[in-house]
Length: 446
Image 1 (tube, helix red, strand yellow):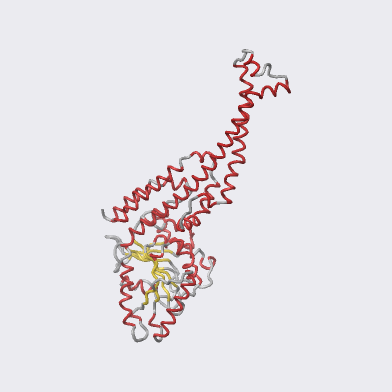
Image 2: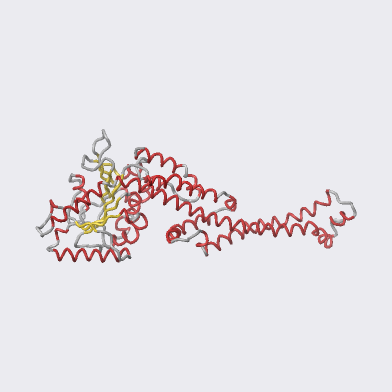
């Protein structure tokens, strides 16, 4: 089956899970977005890191302006036009409104972002099934107020969609920009796997000698270790733009092969599309399954308390049925005779059952009122105090997964009504587990 047809087939299967996503307070829009359109490469870096120069070289056209100072403050999607279509520029408002594109979720970031978002379709050297996203240069000491939108959250949205993320540095600012720190430390780990991130130190031709290059590289490695919190440093591609090289530093030509390897890695991103799509589906469905597991545990605890309450009500109801009218007669002189006396005298009839039956109903009315008013809430409160009891966290992966989902799951549980404790949460969870095992994991082998 062709990749596009395969994606459509999987998309239809995922759509069948939409009612479950909605029922448990999770959105399917983010998952659906990954199944649309082309492979995406997201290029990040500070304003002088060589992003636009690399993109111009990849496309074979001077599309993006280059320079030592900020030249573009927009998120720009660059791709080839569809067959039979003319090159054009599309505004952000049109991009987020087009349901055939994966960008509709970005409208939540507001007009200030949308006015700094666009797509250029150009006749260039990019593969037909690839789009590259150029981004505003990262800055230091910048706030949401300064940009007019939350830059890190927008980058997070694009990172979830991207099949490859290229994070670029230059020798003069090797990882010291505040937005770079936030992106590496928080934004990317929350939204993309490490295998999708490529680190690049560009413009190495601006180092005066090999010693300067080694010092810049060492500084970048040190900063990355501080930002990632890890001692093992990922591979860093060392590169420069031959057409713009500023000096004849000995040995520069040796890095041309590495630059070519970097370009081929970016251009081959469409080959990663299918595996990224499967990973994202498995992650989202797995997250939903864990949320359902938490709801299932809560429902089981609530049903247990309800069962205990009803059993206590049944014991009290039986006592009131047999002896309640005797106590009532002692205080009021009515009914005469009580049920037991009527039964012993052989005079019991339908009328003799009315008062005992009415008394027997009272414990159930009170018990159900108590459970709805106090007991149900007490189960929520106890589990909120010990949320880790809601799911099985036997592995580090599940512990990290639950830590990420816990707040949203508790919020969903806090909104549940009593009737939800009788729903088939266990079957829903099994359905999700079967979907992963039968529909998704076999595709990895293909």
